[in-house]
Amino acid sequence: MAPHPDSSPPDLPARLAALEARVAALESADTTADSTEQHPESGHYTPSSPPRPGAAASAAATAPEQSSAEPVEDPFWALTSLKEHCPAPGAVVFAGAVDVGAGHLEYQWGRPTEHLLATDWAEHAETVAALGHPLRLAMLRRLLDGEHTVAQLVDELELASTGVAYHHLSALQGGGWVTTPRRGSWALATPRVVPLLAIITALEKG
Image (cartoon, rainbow, N blue to C red; front, side):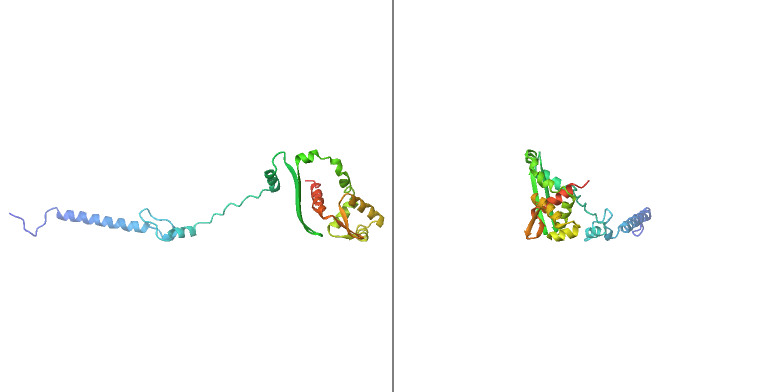
């Protein structure tokens, strides 16, 4: 007998049940994938989710800032510069930019090593000897602050007489350390200010 047109094959219910199970499984997988995707502001996404507009900016904003490395200051910057400008056998240079009683002064002086070794050092004896007395150094320190009269030096340094002051001032003048810009007034020679300070610096026990 031929089957009725409305009748279903014997295995159709089982096939429909299997199909429904597969659809349900697919729907469940899509729901799980959607739940694992994070907020775009976090900057992280699931592999199946492409980055959204503005995500890079959001990620950069939330990332900790990395401080750029600060340059290390060279403690021997003057020596480093000297070696760059004066190759071996080198040179000796001193310089200063100071504010003293005479105002703002800038000075630089240098000589190649060969020149220094070939010079007759005895020629500088008078200049060096002029500094070889405590009272003269005390006078130079006062004159560094500005012009002084002999009377002022006698008073500030508590000298016995003006004759004592003139004696030491004469020695300093012979060494080129002081001048008389006007009658009765004494001053530290401007070109000698930085050299004097360089000598005092060099005499420090480091």
